[in-house]
Amino acid sequence: VITRSSNNFGHYQYPEKLMPMIMVNSLSNKPVTLYGNGSGVRDWIFVEDNCRGILTVLEKGKNCEIYNIGAENEKTNIEVAKAILEILNKPETLLKFVEERPGHDQRYSMVSDKIKKLGWKTNYDFNTGLKKTVDWYVNNRKWWEPLKNIPGKRTS
Image (tube, rainbow, N blue to C red; front, side, top):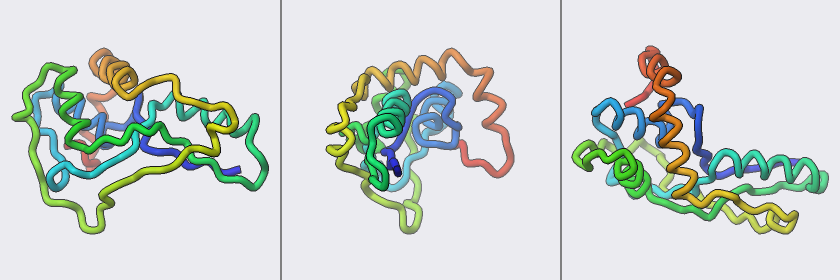
């Protein structure tokens, strides 16, 4: 059985990934970099919903099948950044747009009808999962601060 998940977010995600990078840079009052004009679209799923999806497939999925696990929470990168800044009460002036990476995908999306037929659904809407995630990063600086200084890793 194969599962394919949309973009996960939640606690303990490495600070070089989009959402944690936005949070840790904002909390450090550093620029939040977004590629291009921030119009790239991703479907976001809270990590606990994704884990339950994997468990659902393990318990109820059929052999030799592929299941997409998505939450139908399509957001542009700029929408995600602004939502995080708002929760943290940080100014949008922290946003900094940088040159798009060559070959960077503009949209990640998936249809998750097959896993829904197994009885799976999300427990967290985007805003609830995002608030829970932001709160975790605010309250766990001791976990992520040392990770920001690892040579060769993009965290800004």
